[in-house]
Amino acid sequence: MSRITFPFGPQHPVLPEGIQLSLTCEDEKVVEVRPVIGYMHRGIEKAAERNPYPNNVFLCERICGICSFIHALSYCQLVEELMKVEVPPRARYLRVVWSELSRMHSHLLWLGLLADSFGFESLFMQCWRARETVLDILEMTTGQRVIQSSCIVGGVRRDINADQARQVREMLNKVKTEIDAVLPVFQKDYTIKARTVGKGVLPKGQAWTLGAVGPMLRASGWAWDCRSLGYAAYGELGFEPVVENGGDSYARTMVRARELVQSYELVLRALDSMPEGELAVKVKGAPPAGEAIMRTEQPRGELFEYARGNGTQQLERLKIRTPTFANLPALLAMLPGCEIADVPVIVLSIDPCIACTER
Amino acid sequence: MGLVAKARVKSPWIVHYCCSSCNGCDIEILACLTPLYDVERFGVLNIGNPKHADLLVVTGPVNKRNVRVLENIYNQMPAPKLVMAVGACACTGGVFHNCYNILGGIDKVIPVNVYVPGCAARPEAIIDGVVLALDKLSKIK
Figure 1 (cartoon, rainbow over the protein chains, first blue to last red):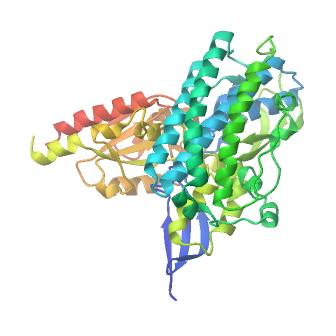
Figure 2: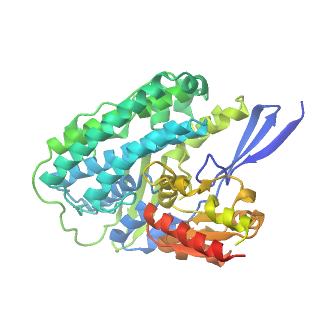
Figure 3: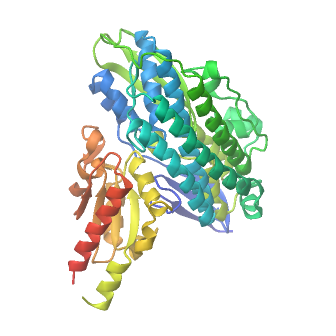
């Protein structure tokens, strides 16, 4: 059988972002995949070395517009760890609220894109309609829809007062009603099962050895979630990772669907048990000479950050390892052997964020 | 206005390319297509093929790697064509203006007709930009 190699991307209707997968096919079967990257590289890590450390929050937020709050949160926690800053309890709870709202909008966005990838357009629209209410909540509480800029080193910039908290609860209940209408379709619909069950299988052992993170790892049977480390207020809120055992695209869909409901509950619990008090402490001085690491859980998986200070206002080094970067080897292992028609679904099932990956 | 020109303004087809944006503007462009904003009611259709498109919507700054891709997409579009730069990065380079891999706003590479400001640009602003572009399109004979 003769082989043919063709490009998937960098401009492709399924992928909103620029990455190229060079697919080698025999007939309709994919036999080899080679990723061609660099289309989204900006050089944020280097730019971060030039800015004073408080300004980097806004640069880090723009690594990715979808999980922007959690990028800001990770960077702030990293610098706080380096400078030994204690964050007020109310700020830690508010950070959980916005993190989980970000996760909700990211997962709804992903569920919609997945439905779109196999042509289920009305489901795509329904998911995105539910997402708009989450964005309304974010806009009401932080002032922006997608890039919130509400996290700073030492705490947060905005508060959610009692009146807003009541409105947030009402709006979340509306979201929950819409989610409850959408999720059974993902769980039971025949066409969705036909397109996802058994597609892109990642066995438990392989998921671990290839270093997959986040929903990828949890869909392959590992209870591994950085929120279990108890950063921000997760330790006090009680958190259990969502685990599925299928290892295929369907299991990954189910993990994200269940996490959506879990995030909804976490937001409500955080709003209920939020203590009164300060929003931020004043951070003085510069990061001392030394190193720190921070691990947080993004919607796409574990985000790892490393920083080295040298006593000046600038960081000497900032290293960011994003979840999609860790998931790419697993994607390359899943694709060979699948049909061309399944490539979009399998690529989307890792929830690729190329803007994160290439920074 | 001739029949073809009239039809073009009635239903412009857009092709979206993400240069090296942070995704913030991209998801806002997608949000424009979904029920709350729903630009499809104005006949705006998002398609993947640049050869079918009247309007190129670009997000993010140009970097050294994707400059060739952007030029390719632009050159593949049939005239008359318009380019819309969405977001601060696409307009000027924005927060990434001093990154080593960034050339700047997309007007360094291809001519831009409409600039939509914002970081991230709001869906309302993007729709406003499309309307502006349509106004320019209607003046092309």
